[in-house]
Image (cartoon, rainbow, N blue to C red):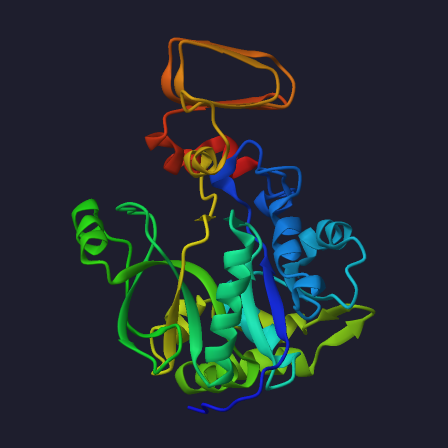
Length: 352
């Protein structure tokens, strides 16, 4: 590892795709979760851009998205100076998406890989953590953000930290852990040496490509072939569709992070949420003294821990606790917080 690397600009690489079925009926294939104003007035994608803007010292972003969402991306980029867009012919998971961006950047560029559909309450801490991660990345590490756990969450993967890295604000990754059952999640919380895996990363473009080639050579070569045969169109880059179709779909965690000897983790306590379902959104929103949150026309009486979101019809709820009610057009969802995990399995969500 190089301990004297000079600082280079941090390039936000924003991954923008998916259908967000667990936030049905608000989130649809034609307008999925990143493009909705779920927390505050900005969409999650717009908030991601704002966290990584030039005024905070970041380089212009690179957005990786699909053709179906290109118009939404460009509308919400709103003329972001210097931004580039890579248009995937089809979704091939995060390893390929990140590799596309890495191949379009200088080898020494520090990539800050950000999902476009997460919420972060403490932007200053996010930026401070990003700079710490970038410093480690400049020294040759592949860095993941370790989200400080706030409870025994069973819906996330975990990262176990290893030994500290010199005087840096990070540790080697000891291991990645699959989503645990509640007992194991509680044990991880009690241990204190585990973080949630939030899917945010920092690494040099060249280092990432080297590790991808070492651990998934076929995937690395196929992505490179798609880029070599691709073409630019203004601020857009289109990889070759035929070459891209042959890419093996795999997450960056499985393809690289769980295999590399260069994995590091920096702690991040920044009010993070993946807004993975309606209950996660409720937890991220401001609530009244009884834990209720309302958006749209609604009246609650003698209720606690109730979320109501309506885009039109008035919703009235009396004497209910731990309830989620969502109205979007002619679709109505009613579920418990526990049931929120299964919204994506509904037939309406699959039709979208």
